[in-house]
Image (cartoon, rainbow over all chains, first blue to last red; front, side, top):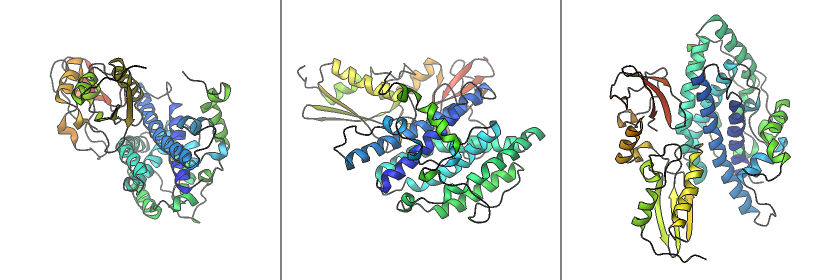
Length: 256
Length: 167
């Protein structure tokens, strides 16, 4: 598999898996409007994932035109195994409470926003087009999740404590965003620049939210979980895929 | 096999006026601004569309319905291609489309709000109520029944309404 295919799948998997996690809130949101908000974000992410999967499928089929079963967006989402997924560990973690869900969304949206700002000028036209299209949606997600982090962090004692707990749960999963996998290195993304900007932006919001700042995500200074980008996932990933892929596994090729 | 009828771009465009957004049935794909180009090469008719939001489920239906509509009018070889760049914006919505939206009870996107609000906790855009035209309204939720809409309530006539967001 060439780097461009692997990288496209990585972008698709991030969006699909977080979209799947957020969709678990459907019907369970703290209030109706926020239930609708988180599932709208889910829809945007799954739409972005589709665009990346369609592109990955066309690249795969182009490089192997003789395959008996050509790749499609569906086969890539529903028929790959855990080890073939290249998403960040952060996005596959269970939702936890609302605090943990919005904090993760904030960490991820801030990262995606900075990443897509660069990718919209990618030499690869289709990656650039998907990034430029998605960034309009991501800017909504970023604003929405930033506001929630501040609202809860600087809210009641209960909401503040829950945000602190979410920080402790999630921070060790943020370092993976900035540690390029082999296939990322060829994509001319300046991950050091993204990391620096991400730390600055996140720090601003956390300060306003009166949350305890964790040590910067420097390698070596604090332990960071990694592996997802190369297919080594947490125990949660298999369970997530079991639900996500259930229909195609139970009734192969079914359509409705 | 059905004989392919020769048909002009203008005629195709008027047929596409009849293909509606399944979520907002007063708007055609032309009103929405998702039809970017119509290419007639030999006997192949290609309609190039662009999605509104990445995850909008109505796009697949619109694409299918474009094919059905043209095929039903004797156009043989129809291809619908989706392109992402440049990204769709509500500025491509027709004036006619905006008028129809308002009549339907959805506040149309207002160009005044085109400027992206990046500031956190910025006050919501003031949107005119499509029912009583009052400007005394407030936003209930930035996200609504579909990706393209936000939910508002009028503080004068008390009616809730959808606002088609500037995007």
